[in-house]
Length: 76
View 1 (cartoon, rainbow, N blue to C red):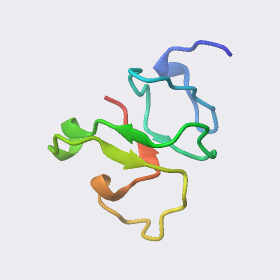
View 2: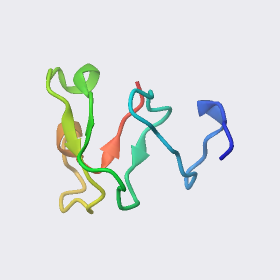
View 3: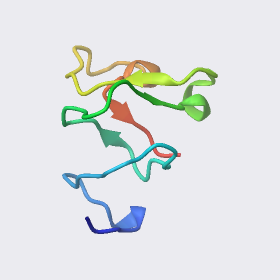
View 4: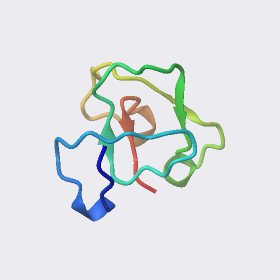
């Protein structure tokens, strides 16, 4: 595992996150998760206080609102 600054990430990079880590860039969850369930704090984007459940399934609606993009993690 190599540690990079967020500005050095490029599309296609794999990012390993652990509990409590900040998400360094907007990421698509592309691999089957080894630990379930996965939840992320999106309150800065959605205003909701509860963590959002996440998964690696493909979304049916590509134009979904941010709060509905359950296979994405967002920087911030």
